[in-house]
Amino acid sequence: MAKNIQAIRGMHDVLPDSTPLWQFVERTVAEVLAAYGYREIRMPILEVTELFKRSIGEVTDIVEKEMYTFDDRNGDSLTLRPEGTAGCVRAAMEQGLLHNQTQRLWYQGPMFRHERPQKGRYRQFHQIGVETFGMPGPDIDAEIILMTARIWRALGIDDLELQLNTLGTAEERAAYRNELVGYFESHIDLLDDDSRRRLTSNPLRILDSKNPAMREMLDGAPALTAHLGDASRRHLDFIAETLTEGGVDFILNPRLVRGLDYYARTVFEWVTDRLGAQGTVCAGGRYDGLVELLGGKPAAAVGFALGLERLVAILEEIDPGAGTVAADVYLVLMGEAASRAGLLLAEQLRDALPGREVVAHCGGGGMKAQFKRADRSGARYAVVIGDAELEAGTVMLKPLRADEAQTEVPRAALPATLQQRLD
Ligand code: HAM
Image 1 (tube, protein in one colour):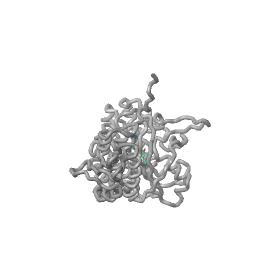
Image 2 (tube, protein in one colour; image 1 turned 90 degrees about the vertical axis):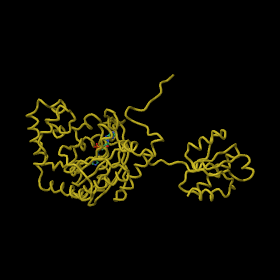
Image 3 (cartoon, helix red, strand yellow; image 1 turned 180 degrees about the vertical axis):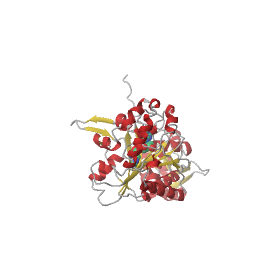
Image 4 (cartoon, helix red, strand yellow; image 1 turned 135 degrees about the horizontal axis):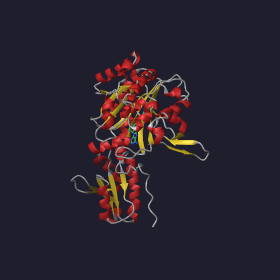
């Protein structure tokens, strides 16, 4: 027998039992974003490879080892997007959204990274991302973080921790980089292979190493703080003060660097300890240099993305029923004539009961089997039509959840009766 074809490692089906929770998250986040004036943008999933190399950075894990890159039939190198920021900036530039205007944009969809799959880490995963353009001050950074805090409240998640840092400007970082390289060189025997390789290409990323053998040495590394200019310091202070006044707790973490190169000044992450090693559910920051790097006129930019798999995993623990909807009415139909009458009656019910879920039994079968389905659908009422009801022009209305008696109702009166009972 031929071997069954299976899904690609790290790429998952989301089954009907889980989609209500996904939809709950997607709907709730979309509602909060709308309340802050964000507008949705949709970009292609494929982009030219060069876009990601230039924006995420040549010497990052993503570009060096995680991208799904291939040549198409014309020989052009294309890549399945590993994240949404690069494509969103490309689209905003190309479509003239950055000319003398501010933008608050959001998107959602699958992203692809060839990482080692584990709990909370997949090769196809889903983000909702936010990108803003044209706002250079710290007000928008603060607003974005307040907005993420509101998203957690709306989802009913109250144990995430916010970490905040500034990476300074490119110049400030260059001075810091020199000091850091000096420090690492004086501890070269303690650096692992990966870190040695990064020493010249991307020394800040060494700070992010999870290697326990390097922990102590990293704890002693100099911090960027001493190199921050006044403007960068004030930028961070404004955010910190606004969050404090707004009642959003945070931890200033000078070790927080990000896995993508485009950030400058503000960076932040929301983390949980519920998901093992993959604890970051939402991450972002300011990336003022990226538009210019991609060939546009300089434009200020801030954004973040949240990982839907990770949020859903948290909700599966704390509120698995969120978003679940049950049927309201299930029609049990005995025989061909009842079946036809029932389908048409169900149409009338859907007209009369907008927003209600009405399921007509299809596929035949005995009364017992049909009632089993009705029960599993979660419906509050079964509507039964058999030969006797057909003849009398009635239906049997049977409550499935409440302890009420079943009643015979004229077919024409059923929509009005159900309207009353379901409210
Ligand atoms: P990121 O930190 O690479 O940032 O990803 C953002 C979020 O996506 C992570 O915090 C995590 O929740 C989720 N995520 C990332 N990789 C995986 C994976 N392999 N499996 C499951 N979830 C994952 C960005 O992508 C930036 N574009 C965010 C941004 C937008 N910065 C500015 N604007």
